[in-house]
Amino acid sequence: MITKNWPVRLGAAGLLLLAAGAAAGCRQNMHNQHKINTLGPSTFFEDGQGARPLPAHTVARGDLREGFAYTGLDAGGKPVTQMPFPVTRQVLLRGQERYDVFCSPCHDRVGTGRGMIVRRGYKQPTSYHIERLRNAPVGYFFNVMTEGYGVMPSYAPQVPVKDRWAIAAYIRVLQYSQNARLADLSGLPADVRQKIEGDLRKAPSTPKEEP
Image 1 (tube, helix red, strand yellow):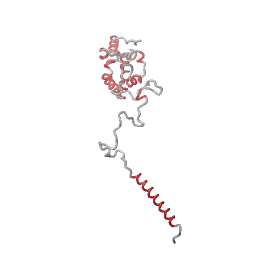
Image 2 (cartoon, rainbow, N blue to C red):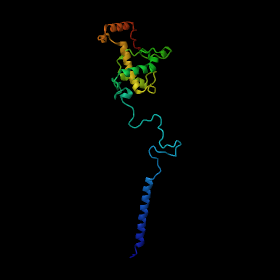
Image 3 (tube, one colour):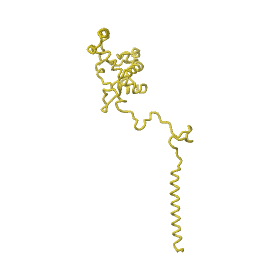
């Protein structure tokens, strides 16, 4: 039975169908949108890849290298007194090898600051064997290599983190080798002790810190 209101009802039904169709179409477009899947190919870029090369010096979230292992400083900005990994013979040998390559041109092989380029006119660095540096925490040397100090530039671009720590450990060996106490040799055989004592008598005196 057709009533007088059927045109109105028909119009309302049509509007509902139109709205439903529009909504469905919108949803489908959201599903079928033109996009590039992760690491998927792309015709937009000349290399055919959708993923773009990372800009230089980009740091991934959560991978910011900070803390004493990368700075040599604690949360209060003071040099740490400990290494971030155990010091083994292998670590010291690596530190010696890297020290001879990067540090000895200025600091010389035993750390007195009389390296070859210093003899050619470069400013002489302070000897590692003065009291102030003998008492400096190991993190101090790592931080100086990382950030630079005075006329010394940062060596972070040339020397990786682990090698910088190895060098810092080897500097401690150099300091001990030039400032060891005879009392520390009491457990050695007599002939070895006598040889070391003779070498110590021949060694030059410890340089004094410049004012």
